[in-house]
Length: 287
Length: 278
Image (cartoon, rainbow over all chains, first blue to last red; front, side, top):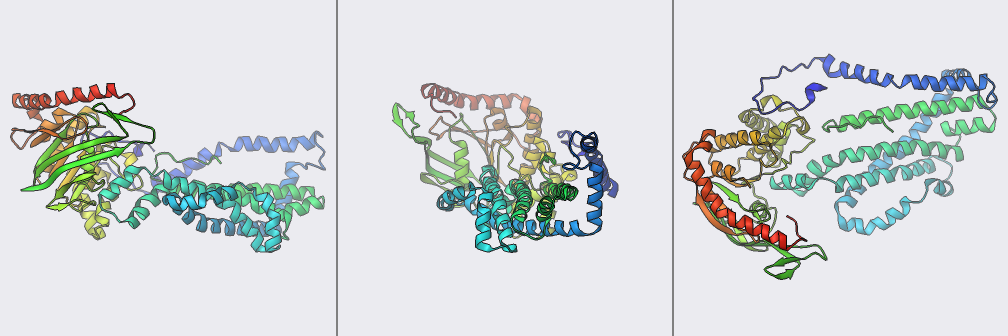
């Protein structure tokens, strides 16, 4: 890291020997990252130990909370049988479809609202009104209008994930430092270039954060939607286990949910790092 | 030959609703930033504008750069009235204004891209400029990885990349520490003396003005107009040693003599108008 920091400037510098071996460029940051990540493991182990102990010591009835080890065993069995994986994939597919749709629609719309004051004036009231209606209140309506098929679920995920992406795009566009616009205009750029070369890249960090939050919302909403009307997906699987009193399966499903969420989050953090590598501070995996 | 001719340029700014300002005892909701600015700038000269804060020096640069329209009056660049940013001007800002998502090299390429210069040519020009400023080893760095002095060098290189006839510099060294500032003044004068670029340079530092300028134009307190133009009779090429010469001190004295009354006037005005800050 230290070699990336500000170099004392005013003394004419000796040529820096540039070490661009694969090890320093790729492997080392990965190993360091892995090492830092590993610091989180002990607390997770404590969590699992407490989970294991509570039913074993009879503090909680094992009927309602099976031990961690038996849950893990169920999880492994379900994974090996392919059942869980199939449900997870279905959920991911739905979430990705809704989220992708939200990106494709909310980002351009956000640019329009952020950049054109007039457009914002005409649309803001409706947007603010709709944004504040709970997705869960609308879930039955989507089911009524679009039926029990895929379209209702994707639509509700799209609806829920859009707002955060839209809001972050608007604020990203609005908070572009005017000095960048002035500098670009002084170099005689066209309106189109101003947009693609200044406003767009300057608002990317804000959009990416909005997308990360939107993706989390998509994952949450897909489970809820599947619990209400579906025959597949992790939400259906967990709900089904609950109804049939398959307690270990239910916990295994929840554990799978946590793992999927974790993987998706790391993926999005990676995307964020890739797209905002020019920033001084890269926010870590806080959320 | 005059490359820039400013004729009776005036600029008023409307204050926000409810704000007001006293102009010669009259309450108004408009600020007169420029009040009849006349200035002729010769091709290839280094002209420095000095004046009290709020005297409209930067406003004048924006008008010359086509970034802001005068309320009345006109600025001619090569005999054509300026009404939009021209390909012939380059602009350097106090805040550097480098694009943080672009590397040093790519920042310098920016202006060339919209002029349709091909990639290889852009890189060639950008690399030449980086080496001119001693920054060849830093082409792949993002602005945050560069010190203030290095960032401003890149910003000057970016403005020079399009080979402007007129370089507008708005207090470019004001945010730098004293040593870096002198080093950059030396570099700027070294590079400029090898070109035929016209420079309009705004500063609050009299030393900087005297060291760099062919002529120093002293601007009055708000509303700004030219009070006096002082020829700096120091020989070229100049280097840092000239700062300690007696001729330098004499020129410095002349500029300060013209400026002093205006600075006092500006301060007096602030006391009278507590609602207005610079």
